Image 1: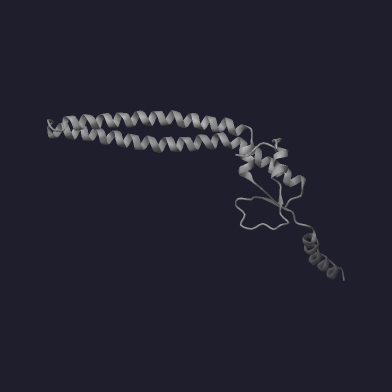
Image 2: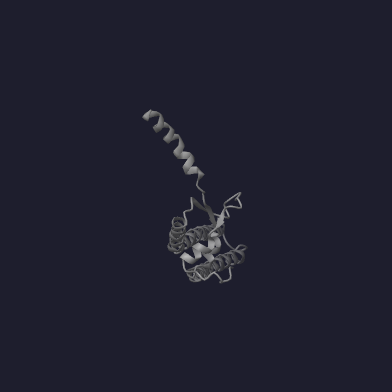
Length: 172
């Protein structure tokens, strides 16, 4: 008899657990990120970094154009060896330019990731806090959800409140 009651209890527990309301929330992570006060400073740092690199690349382009102009001027009177040397020099400048562009892109991505990491960690902690305080089973980003039930709760404002972000700030 005890075995029967125990097996009946084991079968009933999952049904009792599932009969409770399951809360699913979603947020607009992009909106939260853009409303973070640190973002404007991060955007400025990235813009300054990009402007500095743009100037450097423009200087490299000017150097390449200058060497190409030299080549055009000397081409008619130069020996084959002189032409080959100038062509090699121009080719080397192009390769250096392409390598520099790739490096700058990688560095810019790394810099952006480094600057955003603390902000992203703060947002994640706030999401976890809101989820725990409000008994959400999951909180998803609304931009990655293919379907959401009308019962799903938008908790963007709760996360902003947890982060102490002014909800009346205009989103970009």
